[in-house]
Length: 116
Ligand code: AMP
Image 1 (cartoon, rainbow, N blue to C red):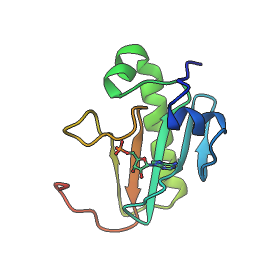
Image 2: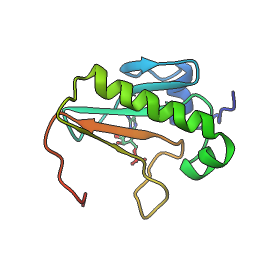
Image 3: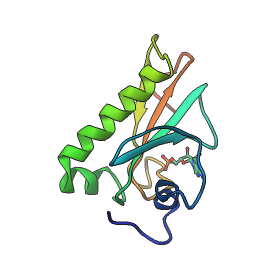
Image 4: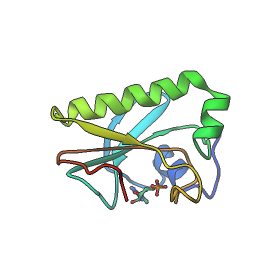
């Protein structure tokens, strides 16, 4: 597993920094966002460090699929039967603030589209 010593989400994945874990697997972990934008707002991350979705998809398409599968499992566990949104911000224009790829899982209320 590749980690970066100064990466917040690597520290969460390794348990050095605590998080409210929703689901986990050998290769990925889902935990609640510290600043939720919806009643359910979880982040799904790989345990291995990839800065963004470009690095992730170029390096490990199988892991990419595992992350989406875990995101869908979070939605099921949270009973988001009326719908949910999976978002990944990539780079400055998208507002990516943590350089460890993550998928937001949002639901539990009506979500506007397009986002602001
Ligand atoms: P993004 O802006 O797409 O990079 O998303 C980063 C997300 O990480 C934001 O929604 C933050 O609220 C969330 N976040 C930052 N620090 C933590 C933390 N320690 N635990 C849980 N979520 C966090």
